[in-house]
Image (cartoon, rainbow, N blue to C red):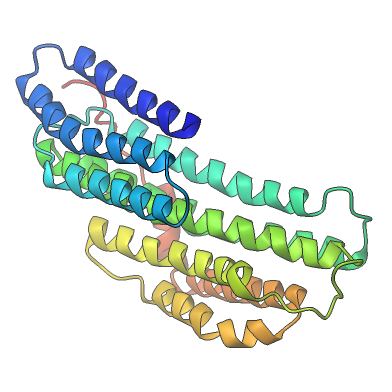
Length: 297
């Protein structure tokens, strides 16, 4: 109940602040009125769900989330105003940074109060490597390209692009990182807790699905992100995601540390391929000047 009420209050404050900021902008006020409908449905279901027990609570909250996301999309984007696209893109990039930071925190949580050992250090290094690989996959060229596309768009098209790329497609990215954090924490626990686990124990079930599935979801979200922004498909990331899914039966039979090493190897191979195969194009993206369209003309 505390969680539900607090979240509802945050959303209501957000809407109120938006109304104040809208001033006499009738288009934005109409957009906020349309937005208030799915938010009201979401808030009602969220609070109702807080009185229920699982699995009914999970079902009601899933319906609430679906109503919120679908309703916002059906409300259109013509009335939204996106006057500072660079700032908007940067804020969402920072959310990805925070999520990746939590995946690193998960390594420390899993190793808390455990004696330092060679396998533990190896697992931590591999986990950091996976997190860094996900950081590189987004911030090396994906984020700059998306920001430039958003800068170039105007009016309602910019608002629609911001909604699709950042409101919707960043959600599976962050969710994938959250799942990864769960998997990393469990691997560290398996390696560090020698009383409960042997180094030969395999990581199975939900933790392994979260570890591999989280990264696969993250990569597929990148594919959709690029498709929405530049209308092309990143085939190597599709392949990497499918490889991770195909490797699940193999990882299921491997020791937990080996499963993590296999995941890291796939990501290193992906980064190595992209860095060499598209070196010139990526260099050009990194050094291209971003036009500033946040100031009035």
